[in-house]
Length: 323
Ligand code: CP
Image (cartoon, rainbow, N blue to C red; front, side, top):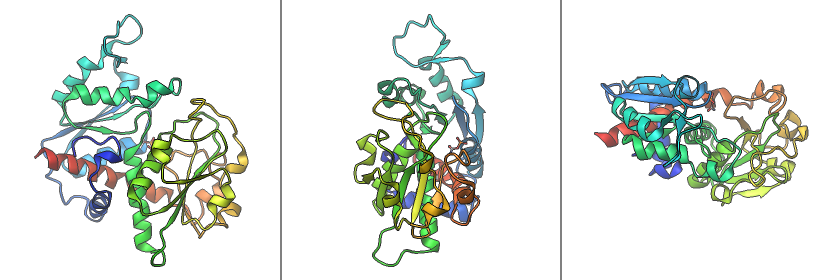
């Protein structure tokens, strides 16, 4: 693996899942793989799980992680080639990235979208510029349109759950991605990425449900059944993935924010005793009810814990291919 920015950087999802679960069983089995190597974790935006789990994953492999909160503590970066830098940006990525390429062996970056200009966000300029100029492998810690470490974690967690409680033979698990209300306009990254990975994994009956006007781009959702009827979608679901996202077409807006879309035990009753997932952080009693989050069907803590093993599997793949 050279870089990790989407599911298309993965040769075999099942093999990567197996590798992650092997690390969960024996976290330090490859503790010398990354010895003498450094990973730079660049955060242009806030994080808890991604920041901590990726540091732990790197350390489990013997790497030294260095966190740089670029968004708060670094020089404001310019990403446009040939920019006349007479505004607020201080340093061009063309100058900064090669230096990081000398300091580190792997560079990992979190860069959220602006949600102001769809064309700019969906061009993934920021992460592409780091790949272009750093000269070392680049890992996405969530980019403008995707969150691949989260999605790999989600597939790992679904596999782990299916290994513990298999679906009766011949039946694919029904996985439902449902939109949920929120107080802020959020990126489409987690939903796009989850859809991309579940479709590429190809082992589920996959349904996406959201109110009108919240369509995601077809490049991610193609292969899924899409419905505006949440009750119908939830029927017989084995997994329900809850997430808010803002509008894609009239970009970055909140249209309908109907609280009826929040998952409750009453809605969950229509499912096949579904496991409930969310990437976190979650707005309690806005996006997801207390009764679901504190109830027996929620696997959000297990899911967040699995972030370590997803990151460790990815870093291990990159280190092995650099040998
Ligand atoms: N799910 C996730 O990426 O969490 P953080 O934003 O806390 O890293």
